[in-house]
Image (tube, rainbow, N blue to C red):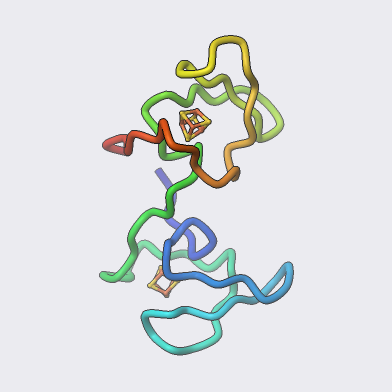
Length: 85
Ligand code: SF4
Ligand code: SF4
């Protein structure tokens, strides 16, 4: 899976383009490729949950809440279980 700053737990968004990296204490571009960043750690979002099955348009199905569609970028709920992705 592609790694970008906006999926990292250290990113504090500032606007649609930039955010503050709380690990590096620096502004970053939120869509920046984080492949080479050793500090990258996936944020707790639906897209990184074992219960999430990706669909179309950023939506996906949640196996823990049958029949419910969730956005991949949604902040995780209490049933979150980190995937190996
Ligand atoms: S730790 Fe790395 S991947 Fe995470 S926000 Fe900072 S620069 Fe981006
Ligand atoms: S269990 Fe929670 S965090 Fe996981 S996909 Fe469903 S709503 Fe998202």
